[in-house]
Length: 248
Image (cartoon, rainbow, N blue to C red; front, side):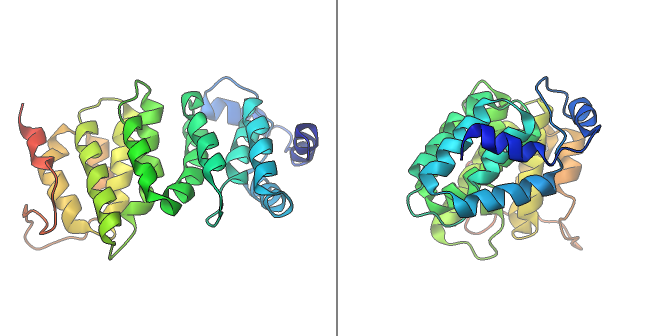
């Protein structure tokens, strides 16, 4: 499938008048076609079934490079699949997109593809750790979004717990960042973790909530179960310097 073929197929799903609303909503200057997300899902699912992994990588790269909103979403969706034997080219392509991130919707789709590749190869968290040092808040945010799968285990394996603890260290540094998208990414991560490990979130909040924006504190605690007596006790297996962030 050529890039022209792919764009032609995408354009058959344009809804008249939708593009202007999308441009106003996302507030990033680029071309918007006006295609609803369900249609993108259907199209890219069909493409994944008919194209080999190398062909998907090539098409995803070409779609991304158009800088058209829906093409970038389609590029990410084309690579979002749990089981892929040889996925290094996919991971490398996703990482190559980091400097281009400038929109939460595009960034989230790209990192959803990245989540699958990180879970397949957790050692890639070493590379993700470097993202937290980026000058771009979009890249720093991506580190939180791509690691969201590690909030979801009720009984994490040791290697999963190690990544969970490491991301909490990143979050502890991020809470002092005034950027809204960074604060939101921390709150999102903690909110999801609270459904599976509420004590760890309570401990984090007891140390760091005072540095968070009010909206972020509220979001982080949204699903925390109510307790009769709150506790600041450190989780038994916690082994992070979270409390050190209180030291000026």
